[in-house]
Image 1 (cartoon, one colour):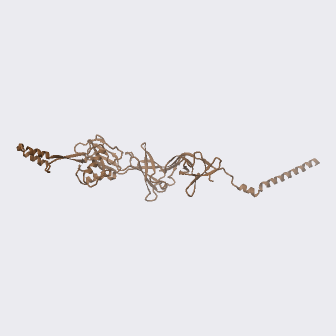
Image 2: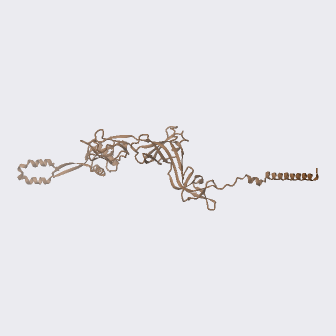
Image 3: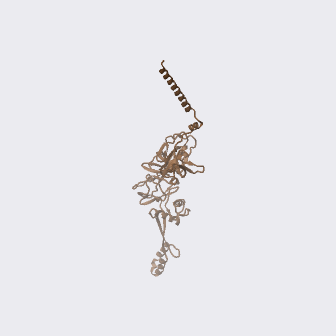
Length: 437
């Protein structure tokens, strides 16, 4: 082996050893850390705060529930008929409208048929001076609609005055019966006086002065008495308070025993819905609901929430859903999770009589306002709001410097994951922190 080749081998060996030594030092430096280095490596990385922008929107908290029409009892009332032909010449109330006491429901032969509340039908004409149970019923009915009089069963002047006002309120005058009587100054009857005068006719010339004096001393007295004909009053049973007309004779009908009938649906038809317990407990009497029935929108009020008499009521899955939202509403089934819980019955009353041709148990889709809808409000995520033990609410609002400061806010309401706050608290465009302090 020559000298040059041996020198090259020695140089290569030295370089290889130096490379190995440097690699070992580098490996040791990478694997061996100081305590400070280990602590820094273990610490969580610093994250930038997460903030969202306050926006203007609407906060809706509604439920949709499938209900059904529940009609109250049906009352049939016979129209009292007078002697001779009885023809309907006008109507004062239409089918589907509420019957109001004191209202003229029909005109028969041009005279009114007035509806009043009472327990039994009329059976005679009533004239001032009469007395009896039917007079008492008339007085009670008049008092119920606002007339002031004593209920004593006596058809006196106060009752006559109330009857007169009742008729004039519907642009009619009551019928009045008249009787005449003549009395002398000494109280003798006119008939007796007249008979006496007639019997002395043969000696008229010699007694003419006396006869003239007698005529001047006598006067005719005409008595006018207010009369309520049997055929002008129709009484509605107390159970029919707020009744709605289902059928009524039309104009031109010649009334007979079979056609002289008015049918009432006693009380407004209501809508009932079965909901799970969790939904029922989120509502309270008085909340509003809406429904579109035969192309008309009706507003309802929740009257009662009835719990089942026994547990394990009918399932309500698919009958009710919830929706809530700020900028947009989201809907999901609220009945599925509680499908096996007991069903509660919600009863709603409409603000107007429902269509008369609705059938019993006909389906109605209700939209229930679980809480009042808040419109044109500042909406922020619910997780941005921190509530203190004293009930005060605060949010972390970002300043122009980028720092966050705690600001007290007035929360108007929360639905789902969003809350509405007053404009005195925040304005549109403010950024609030949602990842905590």
